[in-house]
Image 1 (cartoon, rainbow, N blue to C red):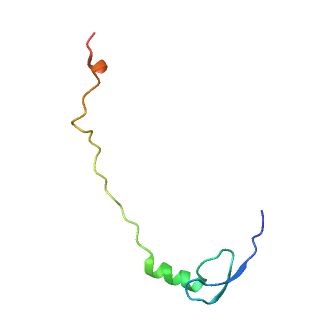
Image 2: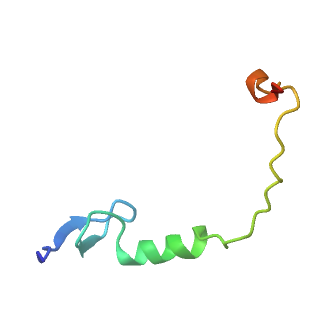
Image 3: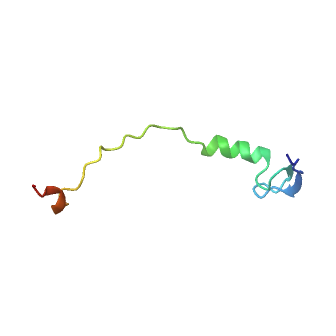
Length: 65
């Protein structure tokens, strides 16, 4: 496993000096974003699948032997 080096850069959000493995918002900004933008998970009920009524059955499948 390769050990990743830390980068020193300016936070793109607040312009403070930051040190992290990847470029992006600093830890403080990330915590603020999580607190303000995080949503709650919810259950979504989907309607039962119903085939279209305008579809005609296959003629070969309906053929009586």
